[in-house]
Amino acid sequence: MHKKREIHRIRYQEHLKRVHQAISRVIKSTNATALSRIDIPATSGNEPYPIGPDPKSWSGAWSSLTEPKAIAQHVYTANCRKYSQAQETPFGQELLLSYLGDKGDAFGAKQLINGALQLDAIMKDLIPETQAILTSLATMDKTFLHTHQTNIDPHAFLSFYKTLLESTSSSPSGMHIGHYKVAADSEYLIKTLQ
Image (cartoon, rainbow, N blue to C red; front, side, top):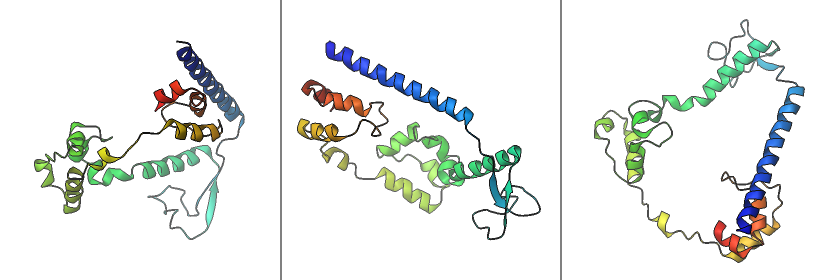
């Protein structure tokens, strides 16, 4: 019972630390200067690509924009272009988009992972390369998932985490390196974290 309370206390302290760091970043960022200038291809109009020239292939002179609305327009346009690249692929368009889900979490994606390629109505409308990718995904040999040994012995766990600095980046699980370092001192906790 004492160990559970201690783990809870450590997690709560780490949570408070993250909250204070976030507040500190916000306070500092309000005092910091924002993006105040961007360089764009020098043309008669200052329209962002695709109306204006493509900055990636531009070899002429450059001009600086300092007006906040113009900066926002160029940054917004560039971000839309960058983060929407997959929309024109077969997986970013219907019918595959609905079948597999935009995050690959729809029922069709689960079927595909399990080797059930039930896309007859969709497959006939796909290009051969996309059909080949889907067929390959459905028929992949999944035996490697079951043959990999993932057990870590307590000695290896101890030697690894005792040498790490507490400021080392951690996993997305929410567990901080400090949690693992504390666990390295307890045989019981080592077993629970494995």
